[in-house]
Length: 577
Image (cartoon, rainbow, N blue to C red; front, side):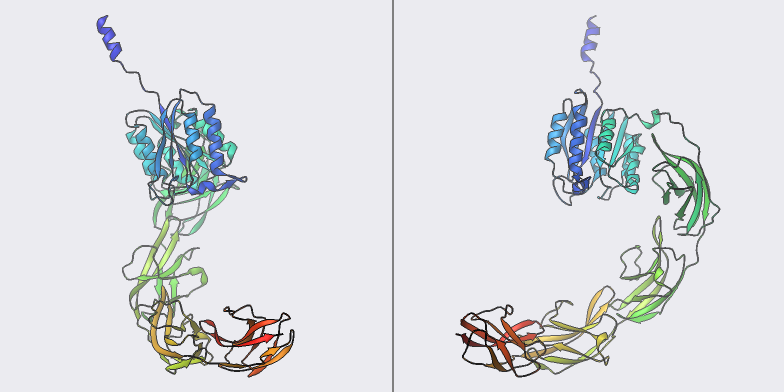
């Protein structure tokens, strides 16, 4: 008896199965459903479901994206799992700030570790309104947790997720024997939480569900990236789809192309971007997860592809590229540096639906480049062919008088590529950016194709006139020549006084450039706006102004309109009495 008592004293009762709710607190939860923020809907659903939960249920809360914007490490166990935690969870959820990114994969991993999933049965309930945004793979994590855990299960509630996004996170549940439940509104979210939190969701392996019959077939022999038709029979339920997977694939996270089957018995898919053997499947979204109800083998053939273009081209100039290839929607020809292998990072590109040939513009920097045909296949973009392209330097020259009066027009003679978007500009001495010009003129708009007119700035000093090449990938300065701007002068003649409301004569001497004017303003005004009366100077050397009705001191001014704005060249006082 004594030995039995010792054994009983040493026995440790098995720990109750624990659960963790992983709540998406990212910035997207500020989105609205039926006029109400999703974060408020989630809080209300938690309050309702947890309020009806048995107090002995061991549960906690982990949140992500609630403290910092743009931080993929913003994950926190805010309420450790335990009994009687409903009030603590609701209080914590009410204080969450919805700010950041969606590191849902790492959040579920940390939840599993907190639940000691390697040693004990554990359940994670992920509530998310977005897909992974921190470069992690939820499908791979699901497989990892299922393999290492002792009865680990993850349920995923996709809150206001599109069908496409829901597919990207459903695998986390399916890999662990859990359920993916879509919730489009408050009532559906509450039902999904009630089902998962209460523990009434049984593992898929333990649920016997009769699978309906289905067929899928196609007579097409598509080439890479090509669209083709397929016929099917089956349940046609919401969420059912046809997909293409590598031959022999058994899971649901390897599809290369898919289309939902709702709305008819036929469907159109796009073939993958690599030739070979594949399987076309009918996938049923059953109550216990996804099932491939029917499968047929398809062979995807290669497609002829080629590019033809000049071997050498001057920097910044346009050129034609002829192409041969699948010509599917989204396909394009791009220009990249020699040796560049990634499907993105192009310097220039043109979609093939614009015609054949397509037109590209060379970059501004001379060097070795390549042109590529990019196939926009459903399983990713792929370069089908690449040909070399040498870009040679472009040159330009500028000629104009070395100095100019402020605000005057400067005739600039130019020679250069003359390509669309090229321009001649005027900048301050020492200015190096290709933007920030004080005046500019596009060379393609010059009537004689060799001269453009620029307006000198109003402030005297040292400037430069430049030829700017509008090349692919940015602007390049091909030539620059110094310019000295001399101060402009002006004088005014007018009566010393006039009567209220009187029209009176005024005369002037000045640059008389386009846009220059003489105005009347309150005495001492420093603004180049708010004038009470004005007359443009370009057409004559005299004119008339209207005196205001209110007696007082006023100023008559000569306003210079220069390349860098308006400035006051001369001022004369006048009294209205």
